[in-house]
Image 1 (tube, rainbow, N blue to C red):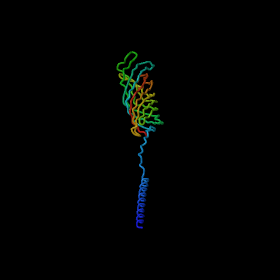
Image 2 (cartoon, rainbow, N blue to C red):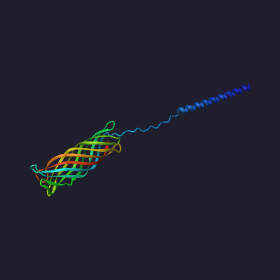
Image 3 (cartoon, one colour):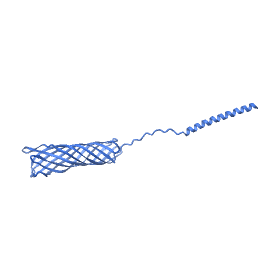
Image 4 (cartoon, rainbow, N blue to C red):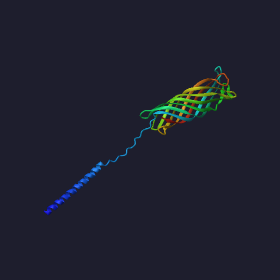
Length: 248
C-alpha cells in the first residue's frame, strides 16, 4: 500500500514537472511572437532638381565692339571711313522663366538690360584723297539689352543652354580731333549665345555666358558738330558675362 502511494506521488511530480516545462516553453515562444520585428532602414529617395520656375538676377561682364564708321557729305557722297573697335565693362540685371519637361529638356524666355562703357580707341579717317590727319573715328555704347528664348538640357543641377533673340542698345558714333561730329541712335538687331548654369541650392543659381550681337547697318544724321551730312555705322559686339539669380 505504501509502495503504491509512493509510486503515485512520484508520477504526480513527474506530471507537474512536465506541465511546468511545457508552460515555460510555450510562454517563451508566445513572448517571442509578441516581440516587434526588427525594422530595416529605408534609403532616402533622391529627387532630381527641377529648373521650372521664375527667376531674377544680376550680372556683370566685359564686351568688345566692332564698328565700321562711314562719313557722308550732305549730297550722300563719301567723305571718309574708318573702323572703331572698342571694349569695356558692363553690369545689369535679367529675369525669366524656365519650364523643364520629363527627361531633362528645358525651354524658357528671358530679358536683360545692362549699362556700361564699351568705348573704342578709334582709327584714322581715310578719305577718297587719303588719310585725314588729326581726325579719328569713335564708337560708344552706354546701355543695351535683349529679349530672348532659351533651350537647354539639364543634367540634374547643371544646365548647358543656347539662347537667341532680339537685341537693342544705344550707340554713339562719329569722329573727333581737329573738329568733331557725332550721331546717337537706339539700334536694334539680333543676338545669339551659349552658357552654363548651375544650381548651388534649390533657389540660388549661378551662370557663365557668351553672347554675340549684331545691330546691323544704320545711317544717322549728324546730331552734333554742325556739319551737314550723315554717319553710317555697322555695329557688332561680343561679350562674356557671369551672373547670379534667385529662383522662386
